[in-house]
Length: 461
Image (cartoon, rainbow, N blue to C red; front, side, top):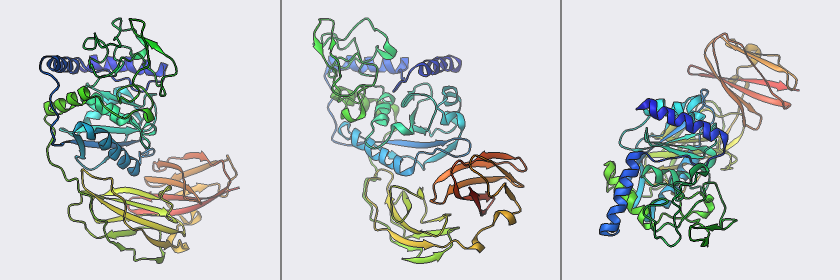
């Protein structure tokens, strides 16, 4: 079975390399059989009524970086995506909750969306009894895809920005919804074209009679820039509002009634849902440490402490220089009431904390507090006196090769004087690594070895 599915995904990978594809998902034979049976029941018994009770579905988020831990989807982005997802699904009567803590995976192949790696390795990270969503950063040219063989969803970070619908679209596939243009994928002609009058709506297209005929398997803005014609030569444009179409994110706003009924029944068939979840908006925690307006504290190993909020699943913690929340120096979910962090330089920082439940993360942050760091010579290990890390030549010229060599396994971060991350890599013991910095300026090199952090300055002329 695995060899057959692996061959399918290998062919899929070749296809995706040949063209940009928003979502190459194709439902499994089992999903299609289930869907056709559901649609037949609608014709025989009518559309099942919607319960007034919300159904809650567990979701497990996985954030993938490369082997060096670079390229993670940010916690702020994932919290925004989670809120948008629940807003999109609210009319269906389905809502999602965090089934577990967010996991981090360092894997070049998964980060690149390699289909063989997804098939053979994603199961190692899955949480059973939940919707598993993996955010990755590079590689294949699709925005999102649901892999029915391993029952996981992969979404590219850049495709799930503010008000994006990629994740919503892919979870529609998870719950057995096909594309509205089903049969037309990859420019194919299905032969049996869905008619605009709905006369063949059950056996053409997606099989839903309340979604309009759609033949467009490429991304399009709304309204469609050209006019289609159905088999009766009737001109029309497809419905851009349906999440399962390929219309642009800003066009999409809904699932149809039949689609929502199908998803509700599919959730129950999976036996993973519950009828209760904690959807409270929790009060903001009181910030305890550093004390308000604390000054001249060492930027290394700062211990942030806040007051416990009863019922909190986790705490969303952010730090930003000068309180500019568009550029975060620290952005994490913390499952305790403290966090030990490393910053840099002599700066004024603002920090804030939001308490969340596992089903409601959309509330605002409380009031921020501030502290000021001061980096002193005693808090630094200079390059010329650092015994465990050598960097040369220093100073160097732009585009000149810098040599790094360490006596111990080291995690290296290079930041410019504004604190922006320039390079991040792992340095094997006694193995030379070379790179160049193409902009003149002063750089800080952070070297983590076991539980010690040293900082070196590198000047590029």
